[in-house]
Length: 288
Image (cartoon, rainbow, N blue to C red):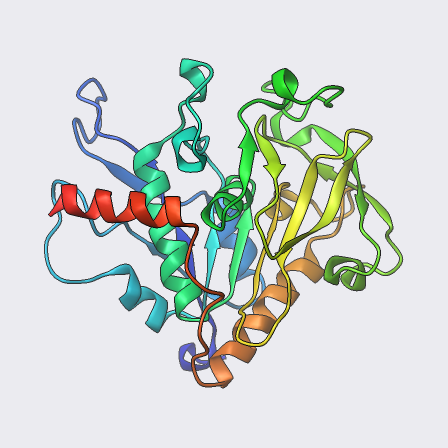
């Protein structure tokens, strides 16, 4: 298939902040993508473009995230660092849960740009948490500490080989994608999770037996675009394994991108949560 006919999917950047002790790229900020998620999107024929943060000490030129949202057909929000609790109005309970405020500001601006352009958005792990916060939800800073009876949702030793079961909520879009799978097994690589679901979003899957939201989706309504996310990493599924096959999730997102590409730009689902919007304005003022 020629490049002109392929979907162009943006992938949010992961950050390694400037570190004067690092032997390579000493003192430089690194932005990068994790290989598995890029290859996951490419497996269905999409072309993947990392969307770099346009602000920072070395910023030059006039390229904005809005330009990327206009040019690309959809965006996937990467996993990675914790979300800064200040993004949902809380103070960090522990120093190690402070998250990455700089990345939050970039991610919030990226979600805003694609939502306002009416382009499909899909979030993975941190991406789910960030989307939930962007539209007015809140998180548990640590499930083991704050959620009574919580499962172990992260194991540093087994990492992507740590699994638990989920219940797919009947009647949801996710249930339509997996009509023969009311329950499934997924990987689990997180210690934070949704405490309060953002308005206008529905929970599509819950971990068993502790009931932590594992998938969310913006409720369908006139003028609203496609925004969905999973707490697990579908890109880590291995063919032939017992975990939920990622194919239907990937194809559903890319089908939404194709449909969006074929029609005139539609308005997004409305403004981001006011706190998030205020943080973005403050950050942009500081960086210019």
